[in-house]
Image 1 (cartoon, rainbow, N blue to C red):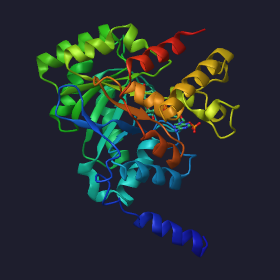
Image 2: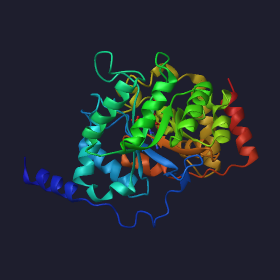
Image 3: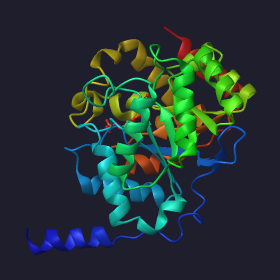
Image 4: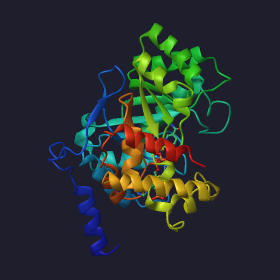
Length: 343
Ligand SMILES: NC(=O)c1ccc[n+]([C@@H]2O[C@H](COP(=O)([O-])OP(=O)(O)OC[C@H]3O[C@@H](n4cnc5c(N)ncnc54)[C@H](OP(=O)(O)O)[C@@H]3O)[C@@H](O)[C@H]2O)c1
């Protein structure tokens, strides 16, 4: 290793958070449902770009950019990588190297529910899987507890009582402070809420996909139910994995998620979608925003949405994504609906 590289590594390891991070006023905070837990309107998700093959210095820079702007909530899962577990390991390394004294300023979430390891105990919603998986996550993160632990997706083969009791027990054991569910539809959420209420579990959030192009939580009544029942919605993929930005308006860039990952398929980029994106961009420009800023602002327009979890491949994207303004006129909202429904 040459002196220049070694010097940079030392500087990176020595980097400390900006003492002005809250004074800048870049981020507002909202309560998760009726709970006391506040989250930044913009959270950072580590699903992509925090894996074994990604640049660690870019990860460090992105986490600093977020934290230095007041984004104090980081969303992980046991299987984020690739390889499974790599995002938690990388984030754990950052906590050790740069954020050791800042744990209490951070809200750190993780999840279990998708396939994580071989055999009958590495997938689903059983107590056996959830407890073991969280222990593994804590070890990768180097933490005693996470702030929010989610069941990542409903498991039709496990009684909902078992999953909810397991989540409750995890809080009782001091390994998580709050509980979330993810990808639970309205009926599944109602069933879980009933049990959490009986147990007095600190259940605060349902994490679901929500963006201008994906309205399932509106159509199913889940968004209304969250407001009624007093939990928050935390929206994932608020930019539809990058479609709701300038990223694909002039072709498919070689370094984009669509080229690099199987999670965003090229077939999605149809002429009908492109027409909508250009029309939404025109609305955004009239509001003095980019398309990404409009999309994030729109997802935050109702208070029941506690936060939107953005992914990013660079610090520049995170900086852009902070510029939200969730206040819309009725005319703007109507025009957005017309565009989204157009064929
Ligand atoms: N609970 C669940 O089942 C579940 C599922 C999915 C996600 N999540 C959570 O939600 C988080 C966010 O999901 P997501 O990554 O799909 O969110 P997203 O914000 O919709 O998409 C992120 C991608 O959009 C592009 N992008 C972001 N900001 C941009 C900007 N300003 N301009 C242009 N392009 C921009 C980047 O793609 P490029 O890489 O092309 O630059 C980035 O990787 C995940 O990290 C995870 O924590 C949860």
